[in-house]
Amino acid sequence: MEKTITDETIEYVSILAKLTLSGEEREQVKRDMGRMLSYIDKLGELDTSGVEPMSHVFPTVNVFREDVVTNGDDSKNMLKNAPGEKDNMFMAPRTFE
Amino acid sequence: MRGNMGKEYETVIGLEVHVELATRTKIFCGCSTAFGGAPNTHTCPVCAGMPGALPVLNRRVVEYAMAVGLALNCDIVRDCKFDRKNYFYPDNPQNYQISQLYLPICRDGFVEIETAGGSRRVGIHEIHMEEDAGKLIHDEWEDCSLVDYNRSGVPLIEIVSRPDLRSAEEVMAYLEQLRLTIQYLGASDCKLQEGSMRADVNLSVRETGASEFGTRTEMKNLNSFRSVRRAIENERERQIDLLEAGEEVVQETRRWDDERECSYPMRSKEDARDYRYFPDPDLPPVYISQGWLEEIRDRQPELPWEKRKRYGEEYGIPDNDIEIITGSRRLAELFEGASALCGQPKKVSNWLMVETQRLLKEQGMEPEDIRFSPEHLAGLVKLAEKGEINSTVAKEVFQAMFDRDVDPESYVEEQGLRTVNDEGALKKTVEEVIAANPRSVEDYRNGKEKAMGFLVGQTMKAMKGKADPGSVNRLLKELLQHWKMD
Ligand SMILES: [Zn+2]
Image (cartoon, rainbow over all chains, first blue to last red; front, top):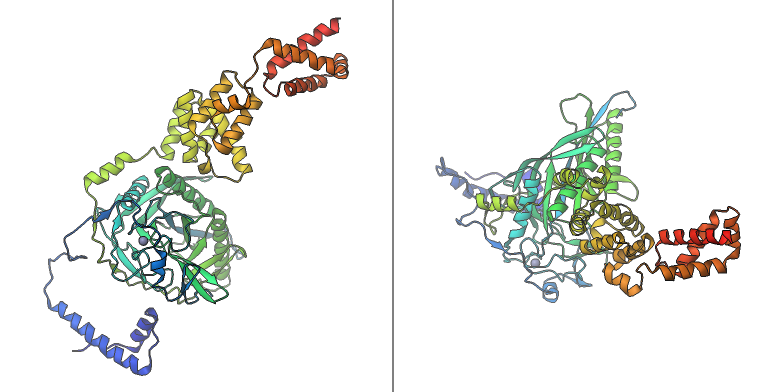
């Protein structure tokens, strides 16, 4: 059985994801999301009673670095990835009211 | 507080305090945390949120968080981990902030505070580790935001109190106690103005005696003790006014405007509180062994309340001195260091209480900014004690020490400030002063005691301040008496 995603859910998720969807895209996303969630539901078929919840798949703990400066000024390279640049800063859409 | 309709209201306050840790490097990369670098010169793919970059946890951050937790009587969560808090904003280049939601490093502590109303315990709900965001600057010309990621990834701890505070006074006492404790631990310099300590205030009001909490608001952007106080008073009144008018308090985040002294709600989109936390798969969990915990416990320095008690028993200085000196880690270090070197705690305390406070105030400095060393302060006390400099010269030397940490011994030598103990030379000067000022001598002879002050002053001036005023006084009186008898 495929999950049904409501219009409210799509509206809410698109706000969180900062996406504006057309009517057509919205229907498509509803179907895709329903399919994905149904697929994930397969996990519910497993009997997990007595299994401890885990957050990581590798049995590793305590991977640390010491508090020593290893990086210098690499701003020239870093700013190559900027959508725009001014005064050695990344340019971003206006955020202030 | 009483409303217009005669109802009594109680204010309920909880605090979220962010403290920037004093590590050399960021929480997940080897970039420097130093202040004042040109924009983006302390960045790398990790702290600029480039895809595929791998964060690795700074051990010092965990140790500082443990130290603060222990000092605030918390349980240390031995298995803790990091989670991603998802939101979009240009100051957050990964589109998530690495924080701790499910298993924060410290839980269930308390802080003891003192107010006029007596002493009280304020509960600590939890302390978690997280990373700071970048800095946004609005560019009017281009009508865009410019981002500097130097602060992105700087380690923070967030200390979340229980809603145990009831007034602005209690909040001030609580913040002060946190600041002092963390400074003593060396975990942060805790400067509100510079943003290394920031407080968000959760506040609600309810009729006194009510068992349920009222609806609370959260106030952000408080960057001084004064603005915290003003924001609390303002928000308490705003909420009571709403209730008295039969309206409801809306649960929202408000931004404090320090200049206009009022707050306004932040846009609701900014306030969408669905952060979809999930465990960060890049960062393996942290396991704190008993051995590591004991190591941190053993390293804890003496804390403010312990110091206060010991000073009272050990040094015999007034309570007010104890309060001021232990109120700053730097003053306490100077006091203990200098006292141990010169064996004169009362004299040391006196320099710290009078001249130091005067100069700090005059130059708008914090005690933590003091430059002179305990060795030099002890040296000054010794010079004055041995009578090698008089008290006026001592103040002059202290000023130079305060300004540029000069060594008092060599400064006195270089400037030729040592008190002249040559009785013959002093006597000769006094005779010259008497001969040069017949009018004052006449006045003194006619009973004008003021004239003596003038003559002492003239002698000190002639001796370039290097005479002992007591000896000058004595010699003048002797010679004048002799002169009168002629
Ligand atoms: Zn970095």
